[in-house]
Amino acid sequence: MNRPANSNQSARGVKSQRHVRHHSQLASRAIIANDESGYALVALLVLMTLMALFAMAATSNVKQQSQREREKEAIFRGEQVADAIRSYYRSRGGQGVNSLPTNMDQLLEGIQLPGRTKRLQILRTAAAKDPLSTSGEWKLIAPTSQDFGALVKNLTVYSGGVPPTPRNDFRALASVIPQMTNVLNTNSTGTAPGGEDNSASASGPFLGVTSRSQRNSVITYYGIDRHDGWIFTPLFR
Image (tube, rainbow, N blue to C red):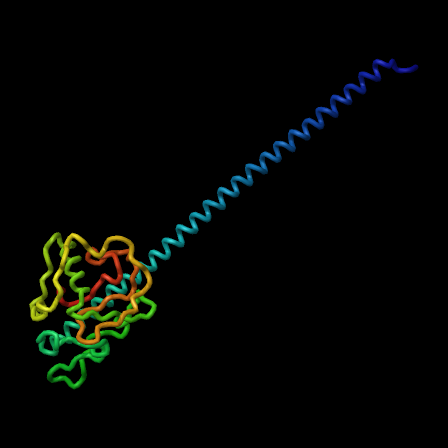
């Protein structure tokens, strides 16, 4: 007995609806999968961007910390040079400019004290090197250099308007130190030019040293934020 035609049509219609629903479900799943893949890609890009920013910040912090440590070492060594200049000056009678050293080797050789056969070491070899410059050479500053005028000016600003006075054993040099010109205009403003100072050191007696680095500093030394503005001298210490 044959099945009625309308029954066959009904069966085919049901199958067709099932196929439509199946394809619709597959399409929905594909859309959802594409959306999830898109979200995952965006999340991955965001994560990679954040990681790159963190890496840049960490690198910057490492460089800054490294510079800070080198600056601390420069101050430590520079103050040792200043102490050595004082010892040398006193050993030569403290009679003004003629009692000052004229080169770094004189400080490294030490001083001869009465009653002693060996010289007294007053400066370590390491302290004779500038850790902030590629050359490692301190710039020697003569007592008549305008750099001392800038130092006096910066120290006056740092102390609230009170000019520094030379120590008793260096009062004989007070008359040769350049005087400050304008207390309101300090050398510690703006951006340092960078690079290094290749000019010649003092060819005669020197009363202090400074770095040849012309860069801004991370830390400040008596309010001065440039390496070449840090003059290490026993004049006011």
